Image (cartoon, rainbow, N blue to C red):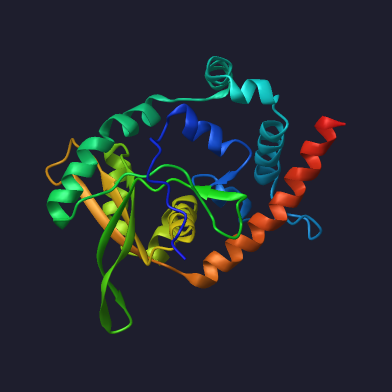
Length: 241
């Protein structure tokens, strides 16, 4: 069976936003990976706040979701965009070009991809490539490799370039980015994900860290998403009664 990679959708289009409504996304899945401080709380307060957002999205009026103008109005009123976020989006084409030149591989852009068995999880890798991947002592033939671009400020880039080398170090420096990379691999069934930091102000503006697929981490993530999905549904149903 082929993975559920969405090749026919542009990221940040209305169709992309529509598909993400009420779904745990790769960029946010890290929020649900921590337990609450109390022993009887399976999720942190940050996760619970995120659940209410998704519950509200699942309870949106069908008329709002179906109408492009109304959906755009809803997105305009509820979406947050900082200067740093806009900078990252603007720099992504340059980051993509720099990566392709360095790795000598083309990148295929994709839309929002749902997990085959857990549709409550979806993610939008910044690109898909096909490269050799080292498994154990051997390089595999061409395998699916996701690409995740981040375009931070210079001081943050300096930290990433110095401290991030693999999945273990990425998880230590920025756990949410680690879980985003694992979510990218989970939904695309990729063998690896290249975490790419790009800062156009520096002499060497690009840093690439190969993040290996961790099946144990993905299994844990999917268990947490299933549990989260139950809580989100319960909260959403309260809004529909």
